[in-house]
Image (cartoon, rainbow, N blue to C red; front, side, top):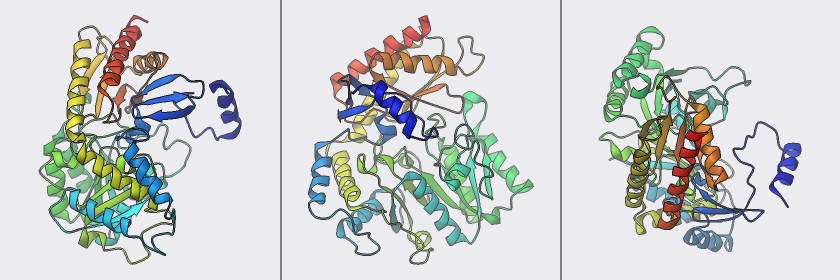
Length: 425
């Protein structure tokens, strides 16, 4: 089989709304490398969008899943429960940031975790309105899509969004929005359009993912915590992309001196298996009546087993420390290129959640064309990169935290060659 042959079959079988960034049809993968059906080898700096933080087919994860498969694969925890679900909840209750009694719910996807966090916040407060940020990404369900602060391609053609969702600007100094301006926008919203006593929750990504890898400033988090405490609002941290070592801490909220009331997580939680969760204050999480939360596949035994292995690997192999080392090396490599690449506007990100943003060479504005050229040049050299950002002018780097040093060095060399080739073209 050839990639082009399957691509044709895909076009005839899959709805066009499911977009793809490459026409590489994977055959097998290991750690930070994958091989397509034609035998071509690629270095994977996407990791399934920060899902396989512990690498493709990590032996410890595979062994845990294989062991669980020999026992049972599904009962639905709401019908016949199982101990490893309870144990994983106990572990998350312990490690999720927040010095308070916690409870956890397992679901299947990040969007579902966000949906349930909103349900819990509404049940707890008896209110309906939600405040989110421009540039945010919270999923493709109707509530997730409504919360997402980016129209293209997520909201186009789907009609009216959910009621009582309000957006305020996310502070990005590079684009002229300060923390003070973001807080002023919330305060203006509360004065002009929305009674804060109607607000159930404020939801924020500690580092915006699809929005461009912009990290929330500590003063923003403190201000949000104060606003939430003042008005009885639930503060939700969406850690779907930032969780499980990616930012140099198990959760990105560990970089701040305030806590969220509810934390949503998915992606890196189960090393490639579909598992998501929300963990939060017990009195808030217990607001929903029995039967109001859950799902047929929520907390599937295979995903639960994988997640236990993932938490063990992160701790035993000190992957948070490794994320910081890899991120520092990547930032240094990008900084060395800056004198030769006038399009580099900013290099940023905590841990190994790094991004580079490109503007036009004269600094006149975002440069999505150059960004895509870099991605395509890298792909020609067998390095898989992802773009993001409201303007499509950001490359985000999401290689597994377990990437071998020699493979990482090879990827950096390809990245340098790709950026120089994009400049010369």
